[in-house]
Image (cartoon, rainbow, N blue to C red):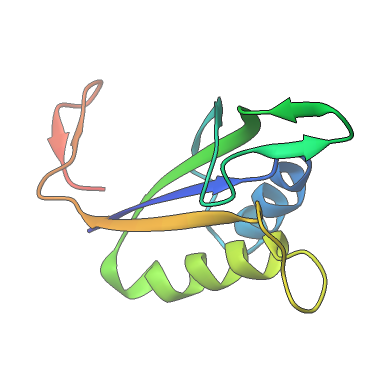
Length: 108
């Protein structure tokens, strides 16, 4: 099993979740965050924005589903043909075990 965390632009959230649900991946944890990437924030006129709003989407999937989930997130979140700073990041990490509290069962 793998955990996929995608940090994306807030305006892309609805499209990503819809596409993932249509592809058979309805389970998600979503939370709002602020932060900055390599660009160290954004300057608009005389105002410098150090913390930029983002959404984090978190999925736990079987190993064989990783490529599909990553492909969908990348397709939905890339700005234009070339992409742009702030489009986001995707992190993939292994998950050793998963337990469902209500049924006390192990595994997805």
